[in-house]
Amino acid sequence: ELENRISFAGHKNVFEAIERHDPEAAGQAMREHLENARRKFNPGQSKPD
Image 1 (cartoon, one colour):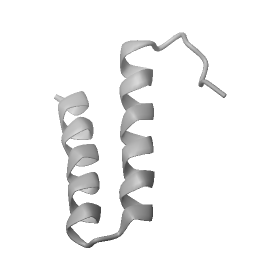
Image 2 (tube, rainbow, N blue to C red):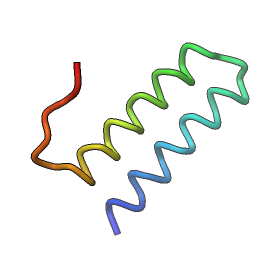
Image 3 (cartoon, one colour):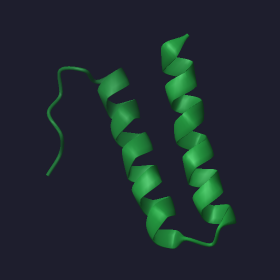
């Protein structure tokens, strides 16, 4: 299922950035992953400020 592949890719991106010792990339990957999760579970909710 597409949503599962997107979620897996998000986790993978975070993990790989941590593995590279790249905190900026890890933070960005985590923010993107959380935003994707927010859109999935709250599709009508606007992005928080």
